[in-house]
Length: 189
Image (cartoon, rainbow, N blue to C red; front, side, top):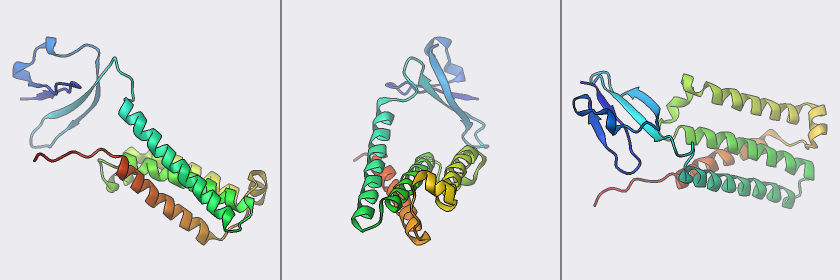
């Protein structure tokens, strides 16, 4: 027997084919995702979304706003600390842009793999992510390494260790931001 599952935002109802009546399904709901649970069950799990609502809910927008604000504040802090440490404006600008790029790419990777696990990054589903990450990293590398790009962007030269440290800090920060902003399920007491 094939189990048909749909999720109502408030009720969480489920029906099997035996009790399935077309009147129970809302015509304005859209199928979001369908995948097999296990080969042994030969069942399909379906995730539905209310068609009258927007693509992103208020919770997703609030989480994205919080994550973006934290990332921007961290980037501004790195830029300010670089200036305070005596680096010139071009070097501080380079560190800020590296921090912003590394933070954004890291945050996308961490958020996308939150429910799937880190191993999913090497799968086919993440080909677009890797293409965008490669393009962003390549453009940044051209700006850092090619003298014309450095002049155009007003970047200063920095040792690779400083850039690697900023990338590592932003990766750890992205993990921390995603962990803090991810809602936790409470265990029943």
